[in-house]
Length: 175
Image 1 (tube, helix red, strand yellow):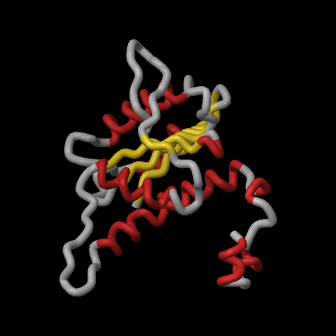
Image 2: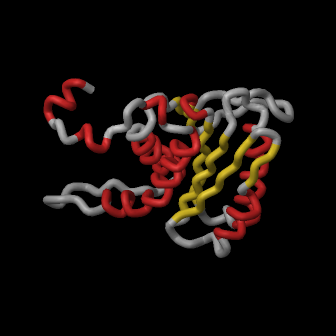
């Protein structure tokens, strides 16, 4: 931090007094900002100079990779693919655990065969799994739908966004 201040004293004007003063709800808002701008970032990656190959977002793993990189901007501790506690006879891996704010980020990408009904069912199962995780107080589900396959994204968000049994669920379908 001291080296950064020496290079650019103006950074102090916008700096927080202490990283500990930032509340968890403010940090969860950072997840929304990443999700809301994800499509613009993905489109920008396709615009390359000097005929360089583009960086395409073709599947859910590509979405996870880019979201992971973007999570590194506001969060210091990003843990990919942590195991969940056993649920209904098996454990699974979460996409990202953010222990600083006790949040889990689950990533989905729309595709043929993953319509609103299937997506809703998958997210309901995810909510049940993460409700049991001891380090999860917020579940943020980001669904990347670049082709507009989900016809009523706000309806799914409204149906699933909830606060129940000490778990806050937030769903964002973008663009």
